[in-house]
Length: 478
Ligand code: SF4
Ligand code: SF4
Ligand code: FES
Image (cartoon, rainbow, N blue to C red):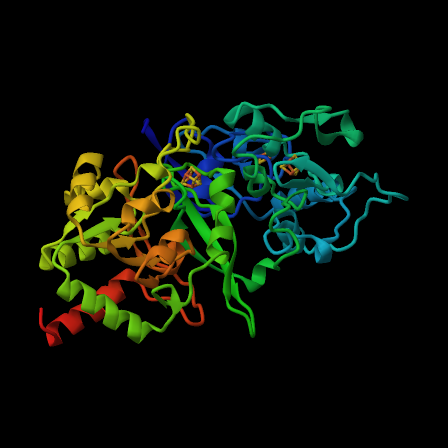
């Protein structure tokens, strides 16, 4: 932090860093400052002119995104002249805009719509016989659709591709009134982070092919979570909805800013991984691969763990810290061995030098913290000795089913897979986003997730299954 100076904003005195951008101070202080082109990561471009403020001693309003803070600066973001200037700029922005909010997927989270409503600007004074029409459905690639008529040419999307991914797929083509966003011939938008341009676009020009027209945003509820797609643990918002007569369903993930973890962005694979939550779920408990029920399956789990002596727990590296601890305690009570062996979640091709990590699991760091071995030698020797293997959401056996031959198997999974078919007892469990817990990312940062999903027939969490078992153990013979 550099030298601090005193400034006044709308009559309120405050301290700010000398030379830093005025717009950052206004945003940090939650002072309303309309803006399209400025973004805290992409920086200033000065093209939209929406962030006008009055500065004492300056003849004309100035843009806050290109104004460095100075000692004694007196700033006004509202009142005399400022609203009028903003309104005039907005009027220019809207000359060619179709204002088709009722059919626009961005409605409800569009800055242009918000500012338009705010200014009460319903009739344009600009008399244009015909608006300049542009194409409305352009598939840019990477799940991103462009509606050129809605674009305000803020260039956030082009700057993302040039400054962040450095893939340069998008550019501003042509000049003045005829300018538009486009790709180069034969070079679609194609990079692992491309869908971030949808969040960056302040209007409905860039929309996600995956999400568009599936939900109106005001019907959805949101909770904060992390992406479980890799060890980075990008911070996300989970948008879900429980419609009448339907189950609670996740409709999209959006990145949530956390400078220490993911900055402002996330990768496309992580963003689209919400589909896994809604598909291929393991829902009905099984006994010897036949449909059963919770009570019966719990009785059999209890029977196995109280009669078989050589027990081996194999855990997924994406379990929460609380689940790992509870399973470790249970294993120790049963004198059982425990391992987090999971080489199948390592994918060297996934890693890059931005966010994506080669470990496609969410909490491997906690194995080390808790002293749960993950190495192959310990795993193999424990497996060899084991008569009963308890597989907890670990996908390693999926391609190594023969290792479970001649063993009794209890499995707990949120999604269907072949290990379930090989199990004597199989219990469905809550998925990553249906439970609350703590996860430690690759950099050692601990992050807590509190799920707000409200599913009908919600599967039990591992923690609640262990609680049931503890009750049974307390009343039983162990
Ligand atoms: S498409 Fe969206 S992000 Fe890109 S320049 Fe237009 S308004 Fe800005
Ligand atoms: S980088 Fe990893 S944690 Fe971040 S969104 Fe992608 S898969 Fe998820
Ligand atoms: S945000 Fe300042 S000019 Fe666009």
